[in-house]
Amino acid sequence: MNYIFFIVFLYIFFGFLLYSFQRRIIFNTSGKPNPPEYYNLQDTKQIFIETTDKISLLGWFYQGNENKPILVYFHGNSFDIGERAYRIKRYNDAGFSTLIVAWRGFSGNEGNPTEKNLYLDGKATIDWVLKNTKFSIEDIINYGESLGSGVAVELNLKYNFLCTVLEAPFTSIADVANKRYKIYPTKYLVKDKFDNLSKIDQIKSPSLIISGLKDEVVPHLHSILLYNKANNPKKSLFIDEAMHNNLYDFGIEKSVINFTLNIWK
Image (cartoon, rainbow, N blue to C red; front, side, top):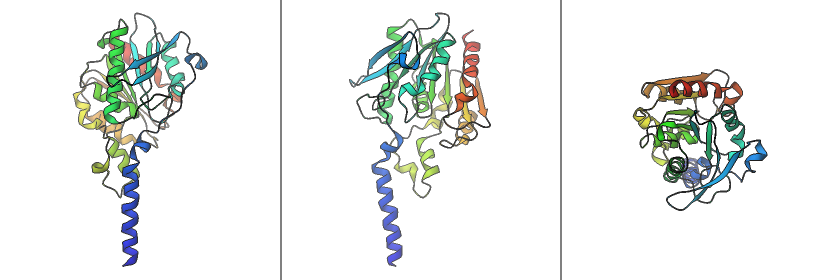
């Protein structure tokens, strides 16, 4: 009997810890990056975007060719934006304008990241583009990487972008948590749900979903489910040997560029 009580105690205790510290797991924040020129991002401006709740977000903006669209990059978890500079540079070199903005709590930004707050960050980013550049909403490539896919999908409920690109997306945070903590009812315990699957069919713009079949963080099945539910026009890029963070080792920017320019024309 004492053994059973001990097992129940451990189950409740560790469940309490997971519930209490879940945001530290979901939002694994990062340190401050170096300036953009450190990463060989030439002619890239460092900017600060203010959200409606007065949080200042660090961003890097590059003005490319006027006859090409702008890619707005919503990054994933655990990274400062400098760690995504090599990706941004590939689009800059192709003549695209780019904007990458760090979430609150990331890259030295103040503030607490939550689902609601990241939606505010995403909206502030799009509003900055519309107010401070010549680009319209139809010129924006809405790019969401992993955690950023939750914001990219949400923004489609408000804006009709040129297109949306989802890299290593999840159906929901609860589904990702369920993979790791199967003994707990994660559906009811997760605070920040980012329920992409319930929203994906509301995306009206063309969408490209990219995933690696060997993704060790977000199972590839998530991308399949999202793609199956997404509206046309849509396209998928599923790479046999790719994992969660090495998709650019397979040159996926070429597919993103081709997909985008075919729509842009």
